[in-house]
Image 1: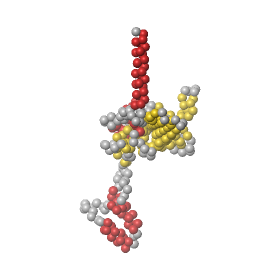
Image 2: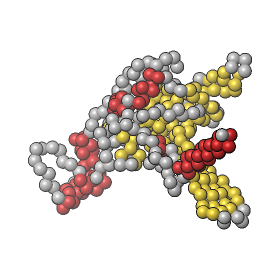
Image 3: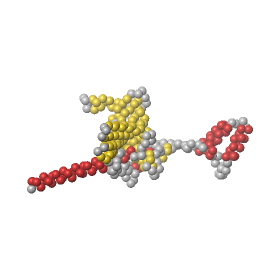
Image 4: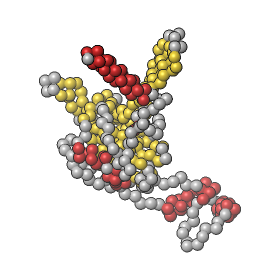
Length: 316
């Protein structure tokens, strides 16, 4: 009986080791694990990631550390609700199309801190300087590990951050910032990706580790709950159109004042108009400017931007 128990223990240990090995290899890029979904079927972000502190610089070049804590439950519920996030964007003047996905990349409740004060058991706190701060906040991290040896097959593993899917250097993302009175403002941020590669080995083996850190850079005039979101369409990060933004004017397709009749003016007709203007002492440039001004006058759009007030979530 004693030998049977020992044999059973050995078998159980072997099975456990096999299970751990399979879990490790499941994260290999050659046999990737199934990625977790970011959004549910209704477009709601399933889980709000906690984004840690960052760095800040004021207009005089002074450096600060940004410390963050987890946002309140009230703020988290707002950010998980896809309709409410879309509403915040829309109220700020952005056009969000139905087929576009809005993904919350992470959130944190920020403040500027200095040295740790052991007497109070907390960091020194600073107010945001006049003129605001330029911030750099890390929102994601990925790595890849490659091992090649003369003794066996190459091995690869890594970590892919599903929230960073589709994000490229220079992409525009949006920062939802809840101000002290509980209202939300929307700011634009830019993605910066910093990559570091470490290599080591000998004549028998070679290892390569690549680390990619995803940051968002922006300008803030105050701190409190901050969330970073991206907008996706067909697997790519897209930039939203804001109310009042005009498309570039094509001088070859200038519109005439609306008279209720179809505009049948051809390119030749426009050339004749330019010739007539020249006879009247106008230069070609003056004629184009006059046509452009008339077009802008007939196609101008009045825009307003209002940010709705959300439930206040606490003191800031």
